[in-house]
Amino acid sequence: MHKKVTFRGVALPLALLLPQLAITAVFFLWPAGQALYQSVLRQDPFGLRTTFVGLANFERLFSDPLYLNAFQVTLVFSIAVTAIGLSLALLLAVMADRVIKGASGYKTLLVMPYAVAPAVAGVLWWFLFNPSIGLFAHALRAVGVDWNHLLNGDQAMILVVVAAVWKQISYNFLFFLAGLQAIPKSLIEAAAIDGAGPFKRFWTIVFPLLSPTAFFLLVVNVTYAFFDTFQIIHATTSGGPGQATTILVYKVYSDGFVGLDLGGSAAQSVVLMAIVIVLTIVQFRWIERRVQY
Amino acid sequence: MVENRPVLTILRHLVLGLGVVIVLFPVWVAFVASTHPQAALMSGAAPLLPGDRLVENYSRLLASGMSQAGGTPVGLMLLNSFIMALLIATGKIAVSLVSAFAIVYFRFPFRMVAFWIIFLTLMLPVEVRILPTFEVIADLGMLNSYAGLTIPLVASATATFLFRQFYLTIPDELAEAARMDGAGPMRFFRDILLPLSRTNIAAIFVIMFLFGWNQYLWPLIVTTDESYTTIVMGIYRMVNVSDEQPQWHLVMATAMLALLPPVVVILVMQRLFVKGLVETEK
Image (cartoon, rainbow over all chains, first blue to last red):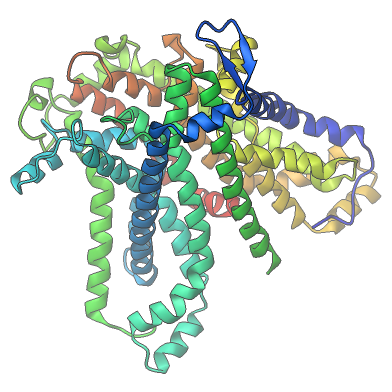
């Protein structure tokens, strides 16, 4: 995709690009390079001497049960957030797509959580599930569930998943709705004339045509669960109880900022960067494919 | 409409209604809690109907904050958040408008390299490279300043990408005509491209304003001075007061204040917001 008509000059475009490139270089590329560099060094406890240790930091990382645990926690967390978030949003979007009366009202209300910061979303749900005064905690106790996410790791995980899904639902909803509205009505009408009921139409026509949107949202949601949910966890459970809600990005922060383990934290950064790069490439390929047709 | 099935229509409204309840319920409970005195939130289940302390709680919070959390006035936090969101949104738009212009309308060496370097920033969220980025800010003496809060977040792959896609849809004849009339590139940019980009600028402004307002980790690490506290990170300090139960009525009032401005922005500018969101990701 290139313009046929362009302007001449080299200095001007470079000057126009300069602010963006300078910020990128100083605040993105340099720190990323530093993380790479530090990941092969080890500092002594007093910060006086650093030695080159090769891949030892990575070896240490992948033999550290706490880190492997964080990997497992991240997997459970992101699968839960993605699966629940996507299915709920799809359900709501399919319902909203065919509603005539009040459609825009529903849409307006469902879009609201997008505006709420993840940290605030976390605090709202933290309050609802608060073991001593939370409404949901009381309701659960009434049906015999002893709710205390301060002590029970599984319950803490449920809490952060709920908050993360709630926050992301509007995003997924909007994209599914846009995808649904792009499906030609004639296809659905043709199927209806051939005698296919609403459920059959959904599974054989709507759902397959929606798969590009679904795939895009899948990648976005995994990225969201891996990185943006840091806020929720930091503001509520702080990774606890024990290590039950310590996801990878929370561990980078707590090992680096709180534990001051430079080499280890840098190695974790490098692993995370590799994960984001893979996710972004997958996403970009999707964008390119979309642009083609 | 393919066919009319009343049962299905009722089911649809039922599911959507339930969705709306799930979405609104936490916010309603927070609002209710913020209108009660502290005593109502000490034991038993939290109330479901508003109390009578609305004005009292909020005015106290806005003017003098919560004493256990340093007593930073929430009014000041709101102001900080507003400044930060505004600077980030404006900065991102300004920087991306010109870089997209350079990439689309010029041929120069390393053009694609520049494009890829910008695109790379998408791949490096701040949470991932937190420690080295903090060191850079500290070395530059940008801790505790609006510059430190905003400049590093101004680079934007998303906005650049959106403007690039938009410029590519503008007919070549316009640039040709401008050139024939003797307009230089900057004249073309100012008099033709900018006016054409108005809707896109507005749409991306909404998205980026929300992005800036909802920043959390970044202000938390680059500011220690309380006069730079933004409201989203301020909540963290209020929830995590040492050795005691948080004062829920004040925490919830702060949460309400933190979510009100972005929610208003989304509701008022809904069409632009949806356009911006769906198109930036496309």
